[in-house]
Length: 97
Ligand SMILES: [Zn+2]
Image (tube, rainbow, N blue to C red):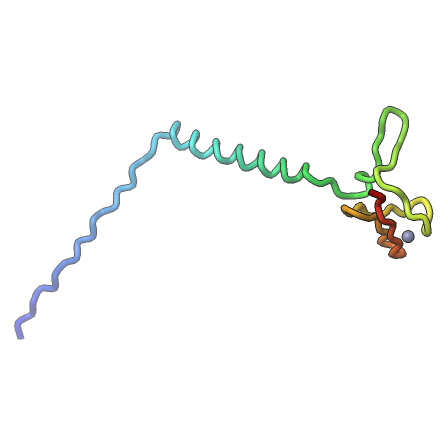
């Protein structure tokens, strides 16, 4: 039985061209810096936490949102586009137009 020589599959050798170090550095560093800036902008968009309810001007402290009338001081109301609501008791006060 004549054995046919199996056709040799010659895969083209992939030669990875070595990139010059300087070019690789600049291409990698530029987009990274842009991403960081974008993230920072998003973070600054909305402050969260109790500290966002207060504003300090010099020695004086002012509240950025009214407190709940029912619960008293210490309970801030949520600022919606047309109303203030208390998350503690559900008190709602509509903004006057
Ligand atoms: Zn309340």
